[in-house]
Amino acid sequence: MKRGNQLNFREFAMQIVFLATACVSILAVILICVFLFANGIPTMREIGFVNFLFGTTWAPNQNLYGIFPMIIASIIVTAGAILIGVPAGLLCAIFLARFCPPRLYKILKPAAELLAGIPSIVYGFFGLMVIVPLMQNLVGGGGKNIITASLMLGIMILPTIINVAEASIRAVPQSYYEGSLALGATHERSVFSATLPAAKSGILAGIILGVGRAIGETMAVVMIAGNQPILPESILSGVRTLTANIVLEMGYATDLHREALIACGVVLFVFILLINLCFSALKRRAE
Amino acid sequence: MRKKRTPAKWITACRNHPMSFLQRVLVFLAAFITFSILVALIVYILVMGVPNLRPSLFAWKYTSENASMLPAIINTLVMIVLVLLLSVPFGVGAAIYLVEYAKRGNKLVKLVRITAETLSGIPSIVYGLFGFLMFVVALHMGNSMLAGALTLAIMVLPTILRTTEEALKAVPDSFREGSFGLGAGRLRTVFRIVLPSAVPGIFSGVILAIGRVVGETAALIFTSGTVTGVAGGLLESGRTLAIHMYCLLNEGLYTKEAYATAVVLLVLVIGINALSGAVAKRITKS
Image (cartoon, rainbow over all chains, first blue to last red):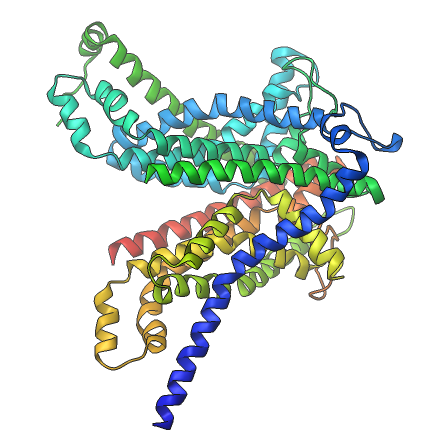
């Protein structure tokens, strides 16, 4: 009887322990929000919300903290990455799901995973050593510009899009494809016109995930985007993204300058939260 | 069973179904380009980097002449161990709660899922800022291995949670029923029956986490810092390999050394990926 009680107690205690570990991720999100917002919001108020978000001059030595050029840069570079990465990634996913011979698949699938595993610093290095000189030869100038950064990010989001899109294409019932074939459509047409539309929301979720990756990418962008904190004049101008701004100056910034960089991170964080919200809404619809 | 396409058939296919032909060409082209980029990247790094791998790069002590990466490699290994020690118990424990204890439709489970999803979407630079604000400044750890490890532990938590959850779900219910039927309690069932059969799945999550730690830069710069030597204690700063490479590039004088470091990083990542592939294969076999 006593032993039974002891056992029950142990069961109960361990259940509480497991419950506590489950709460860690909730706690982590709360802590991240609290620390970022508690540091960022007062700074934004001090600088002035409008001055901070829509000011076009970033000059910490003159006490000017306008991050509008960085916000625009992040959005443009991400849009460029999507423009490059989504068609390539989607077609690649279609290839892997519906065109690839099984023997080749055994090589290409791990390769796609490797693409995701390569550290962003190595991507950045590759971009710096290969893509930047290429751009210099093609269009002249320093070679560090919006196109370079978009191209690099487009490559970096490929594995995300490939994986999610491939999974959602595979999840479409085979009968759609077979029905289309039976109506006389070619293999290609069946895949593109019957299977693909059915996988739409899954693919869209993958794209949103890619947007999150691209907007949050730091190390690769900082090496190849040029880092000028001004509004770009053309797609051949160098830009500084929100992430790059933080990495470049956090090392030596003090006082309000440092606070402003943290506020920069808060803006980025809000972007990411919005993207996450879209992602989970879409995922729920896909399921 | 598809017909073999001779050039003549390609031309007829092109004439009869131009759209299908175009689609086919695009799909193959995209796949070709994607994978040739990967090959180009790997080959380029290896060709440029391997000749630069000199013994002096693996000297015990870093000096500005040799730019040795050995201390950084040791720091990376220490960091991996620390991060796993901090994240695996919580990740696995949380997964056990979600799969083995929580009732269906539990509100808490939903919340844990949402927060884990949120965590996996946060970019590493935001983790870096958070780690800096919380561990380095608020908890007075300074730039230290511990601060870096805590930050990364939160970052890899969702990875471990998700893979463990999948692994636990894959354990057939008959295992649990058999264990309960023999009179074992829930706890004993979890530790003796369910967890051992889920080990390979958990292991694959751990490998994924290791991969992220090895490649991480942005989250570590402001938390574990950039000191060049081997970190002497938990509260001392030390740079990992990825940060070492970033610093080399930043200083601008060490391009050759950066190539060599990139080779080591790349080889590590390829090794980790191969390992996780092997584990995945074993899971599907059994």
